[in-house]
Length: 385
Ligand SMILES: Nc1ncnc2c1ncn2[C@@H]1O[C@H](COP(=O)(O)OP(=O)(O)OP(=O)(O)O)[C@@H](O)[C@H]1O
Ligand SMILES: [Mg+2]
Image 1 (cartoon, rainbow, N blue to C red):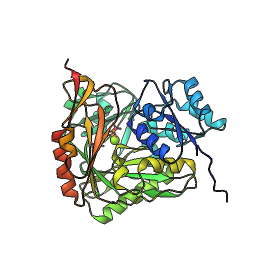
Image 2: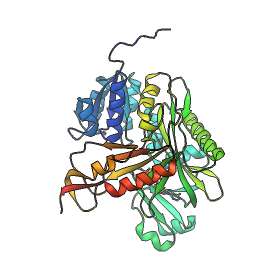
Image 3: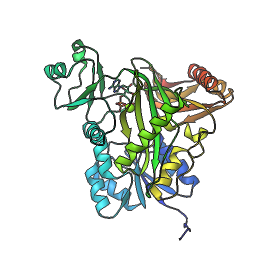
């Protein structure tokens, strides 16, 4: 069998220039690939590292075509893309992974839930709501969670309603409603599957949220759950990606219910915030793994080398403009702290500006250190509106 790769090993066409893309470009360069990034904003976080960016939107057929024609394999770091164009490009012979049809299924939360239901994968019961109607919501029954079919991320596009009085917070868009899940914990499993169908899961992580906020507050690996629960979560995540026939890396978000059932919440057809710790804490990180998967290379080992806690660094609520990283050296003084700054030219309230992974042989100690880092580092902007 042929095993010789000319340099560049592959030209990767990457849709989306954000932090996930930036980390993927770094991994790509390490293994001898080059990248071209499609993003509407010049000097995007990924574009800076790639050194080659096409300026254009993710829904612009001409720009998507230009990207495909400049690369050997096309992939993406976000879901909000014109899939009709991707389907057409794939038909013409361009390699696109994960597959455009799979992206189309997952980018609509309703078709995603139907896929889970049809594949017999446990998930919260749901119903389609073409428009937000108080009677239909009441008939479904509270407490419920309304989710916009399209365009939501970081909890935008999700409204939790405990009673019918909360209907005032409904989203005025085509949506679905699902049962509110009383969860002990929220878990996530990153899964990689390559073009040969080999499939590997990363160790289950625990996602901690601050009450009332949907954005991830801290991630812990390993999750504080019994080993058999972790294995069951990993097996369920693998089954989900096999049912999808997915190629690439996927994030499978799950609930561990009060009565110890595991339900799939949602699937991200891309690298994911809950896999950031894999850069330092696992043998093969999620970004290199994704590239291995889509390039038809063997998958790398997913073993955890050391426990890890990860926090996102969000833009300060009261300022914007050119970012200032406060408390950086105090945080870096703590042993095991790995700092990532995404290279965004401007901070905005709650914008993801970076993350910190803390490694420690003891997971509780990693968590304590991450909490200290969270208190030490703030990202403020030079402007105070
Ligand atoms: N059925 C549910 N029951 C209880 N809580 C839920 C339910 N669905 C979602 N949530 C809460 O809302 C959060 C965000 O929901 P979800 O992951 O579906 O949306 P999202 O906007 O795609 O999020 P993200 O981009 O942050 O992953 C979940 O992590 C969970 O905390
Ligand atoms: Mg989510």
